[in-house]
Image (cartoon, rainbow, N blue to C red; front, side, top):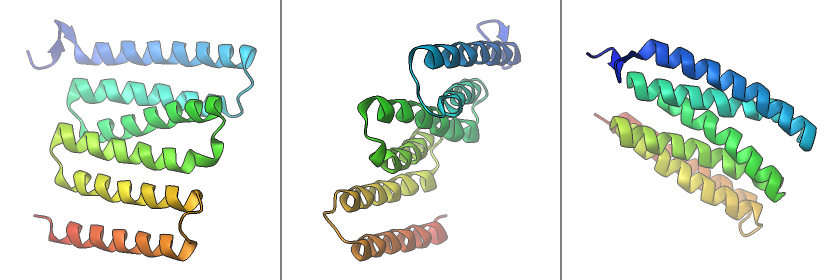
Length: 162
């Protein structure tokens, strides 16, 4: 049957994953507030678990939008913890760009949407330019020039895409 996964209705599995993610969200917030003081952990924990829920939804129902948004939220929550524990909060914009890049690339890979591939390539060059700027290896004007060229190339590719 198309509406079942391992002889269990897909909507039942989705409701079960929602309940498990809510329980894990509450438990992780309690643990992080008792043992660590991480500012705004509730928000990034929420992003992590909602992203996990959306990834399960995209697997069960083959939804590209749930895949993109799920990967994005999952990685935003994961990268915040990585940045916090490695004490590299200065580079968090790079991690945000990396989350968008991964979401675009995996959406292209699983759902064969060619625009997502070109968006991922553009985000890669934006991320590299931003990293070089943050490390003071290029000037602001050079970074903005790189950004304008990338946006123009992406716009041209989008308009010529069939």
